[in-house]
Length: 265
Image 1 (cartoon, rainbow, N blue to C red):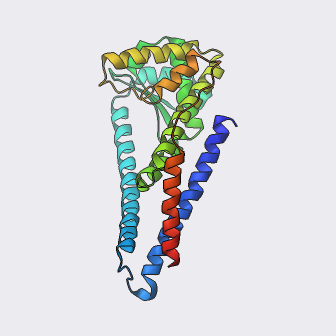
Image 2 (cartoon, rainbow, N blue to C red):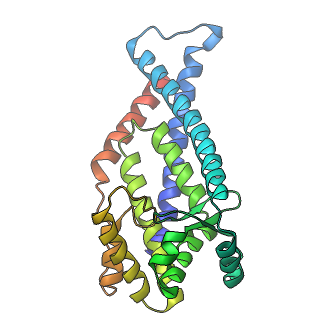
Image 3 (cartoon, helix red, strand yellow):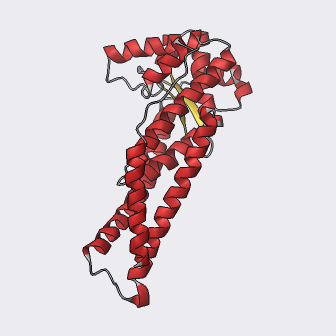
């Protein structure tokens, strides 16, 4: 099974699992409020109520925080917009059909931002740091994120991971999906460039920069660097992302069964 298909199955399975869990939480609350009277007189029901409240509060907080941070970031980037380079890159890569915003910044910045209409943000430092082919590889990586709506997928996954953080399966699934999201964007860039050379050069340079200045904001290379380096330096080797699923899954299923039992009592 290809990684992209596997990711789709994971997203679908996670959606079903969370839906079942949410349904059971709703049934428990409904059972307690039966006839308009609160029936939560045992510690088990009180615990379930706390989990339900925690899930709702965390989900609302994440939505508000994400909305605020996105608006703040866009405002900051636009205030530091480099008009000449922005116009030049949008003209040069007009075939991508995605807005490119170049900002004045001494740190490496290369990211896809926005969910409804994502755009690519690059820093002037990044453009000076790499040659034309390397910049193109970075752009193609971020463009894949835009076309694949990865910002939306990762936001929803983050929302579920934070809201249901008490389910052990959530964090391993998040790490696995996050890793393959980056690896698939790299694969797209490699296919479009016809070689691993340029992306490998980018990752090697960024690894050196990160060692020298850990404070630098390196979105493009901040996650899953180990697997990404293997993919570009050893293209004939199958990348296996190691994440422990079994034990977290068993514990999460056990919690779901407890909710189901609690909803029927």
